[in-house]
Length: 272
Image (tube, rainbow, N blue to C red; front, side, top):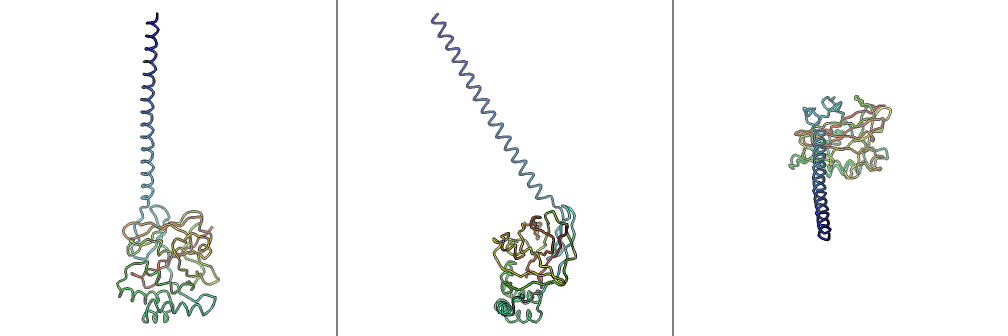
C-alpha cells in the first residue's frame, strides 16, 4: 500500500513537471510569434512610409529658380514669379539710411552703386552676385546673410493679388528647383504672408534663425512654418501646413545668388 502511494506521488509529480515544460514551450512559442508579428508589422509600416514619400511622380521643374504647385501626386501647375522692390519701411528714413549703410558694407562700392541706382531686388542681388562670384562663394545660404543689410525694409509687389489661387483646406506642396539641393532649405527659404493693400502687397524683411520658424512672433510678422526636403537631383519639396494658411496672399522667397539677378519670389493666393 505504501509503495502504491509513493508510485502515485511520482506519477503526479512527473505529470506536473511535463505540464510545466509544455506550458513553457507554448509560452516561448507564443513569445516568438508575437515578436515576429510586431516585426512584420513594423516592416510593413516602414515600407508604407517609404512608399508614401515616393508617391510624388512630378518631374523637377525645367529651369533653376522655378516653382510648381502640386495639384496631385502626378500633376502640377507652374506658379507665377514676381519681381519685388525693397522700399523703406513706413517708420521713416532713418532706418533706410542705416540699412543702406549695411548694404554698402556687404556688397562693396560697385554692388552698392548698382543697388542704389536700380532700387530693386534684382539690382541689389546683381551687385552682390558680382562680388560673391569673384570671391568664390557658392553657398546659397550665404546670400541670406548678405541680405541682412535690408533687415527691416519692406518687400513690395505691385498689384493686390497673385495671378494664381489655391483653394483653402489642404496642405500646399510646392517643388522648387534650385542650383542644387546640398544646402539645408530651412536656412534660406522663407514662406511669407503679405499684407494686402489697395494697390500692392508687402512684407517686412526679417533676418532670423530658422529655429524661430513657427513661433508666434514670426507668424505675426508674416513668416509661416513649413517643411522642406530634398526632391530629385536639384530640387526641394516644400510642404506648408493647411493650419498655417488662411485666406490671403502668400509667397516663397529664395534669395539665390548663384544664378538669379533678382530674388525669385513665387506668389499665390489662398481662397475659401
